[in-house]
Image (cartoon, helix red, strand yellow):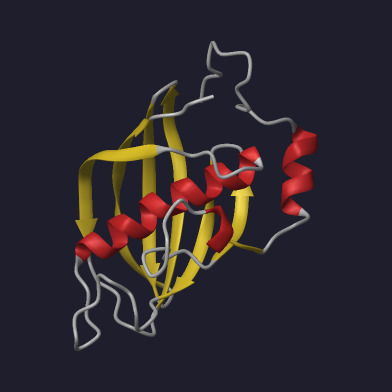
Length: 160
């Protein structure tokens, strides 16, 4: 990750800031997401590190991506990964100022999809940070079993 030319950038974070954040874990993600209910899908930030982190969430019955029978599609894991990016960004910044768009999903592979009641865990790692453009590698598991991996390309609207 590279630090932005903008002097207000919070990246990379200091070791002291990481220690301060880790002391708060696990941390509820609901108030960190720019999404409203029922589309705020991420429940908890479980881990945080300089270039990423991990979230854990339960697929709730009101999940807008779930069909009447409780099944979902691969797009569900993409959305959990994108929201993990937003939640971790807000957690690390200490505010909810993330404004970004998912512009591309690359090299994604899916071996399972979640259903209502399943636990989805997502691990993200920043592959590159070029100011307004960010590449994020993600891996998702459903009930502890590998379910997906790939890369998200994000455009950050209000990069600081």
